[in-house]
Length: 172
Ligand SMILES: Cc1cc2nc3c(=O)[nH]c(=O)nc-3n(C[C@H](O)[C@H](O)[C@H](O)COP(=O)(O)O)c2cc1C
Image (cartoon, rainbow, N blue to C red; front, side, top):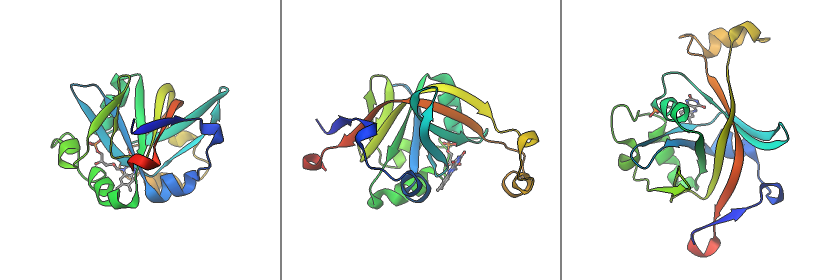
């Protein structure tokens, strides 16, 4: 077994480093078709009494269609050597090419949820709620102009973390 299931409340992780600096791949879809994109905005925490992971996805992302069409998604973290792969997945769209194949990633499944064999850590998430990022509620009024000149407001997806898979040292 390459990955081992871990209990998230027994893990020492730094989400600011992992999400903000090392980045993550958000993936959703089926065995027939899946898509992935890089993200560096998001969070982990607790909501409705569950451990959750939150992502923010702009409407034009192809990955959004897959997240909308499926109940679950995965979030994968990688070693530094995959930084170029993540940069690639954050630049090209699956609308234009077979991004997963071209990125050299190998899709595998937790139940029906796609994730990548090359990852070091994987969060399997079940959509719990989604919300529009609405400028009417911006306290920081400068954020609208700074981050949304095209008015392409993110959609927030909060997922319950169903499982955490970590690659075991022996197979790394
Ligand atoms: C470092 C990095 C972080 C990114 N973070 C986000 C993000 O949090 N939300 C988002 O909507 N797009 C983000 N993007 C942009 C998408 O990854 C990018 O537009 C991607 O090509 C979308 O692919 P898709 O159309 O196949 O879904 C990021 C890109 C990079 C390089």
